Image (tube, rainbow, N blue to C red):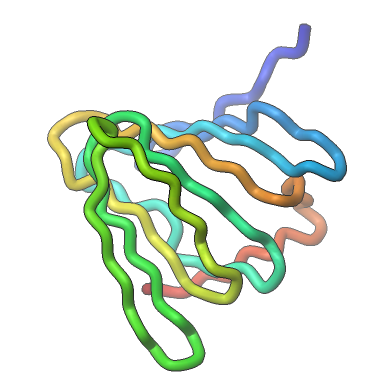
Length: 121
């Protein structure tokens, strides 16, 4: 058995659950009402996100032409979103309750080579 580290801040909690070499990483996150996660992009990492509880506004911006896509999602009708490589993205809790997210990335997070670049959507 391995005890996992819960990373907490003003937005909520973040937990790296599964790390499988060659397959990637699955994480679980919570966000408080009004909190925004993301506002970053990746040059190589692919992320897939699913809202499993709560309400969110997912925003993505193409850094090449500034095209913006927005989608309101709810855990009542879970959907899977692929975040395109090179697009800035954010997830805002627009509900009154805690937002719960399941996140998959195609690579394991490496703090020495994070591939996460801060940039507003």
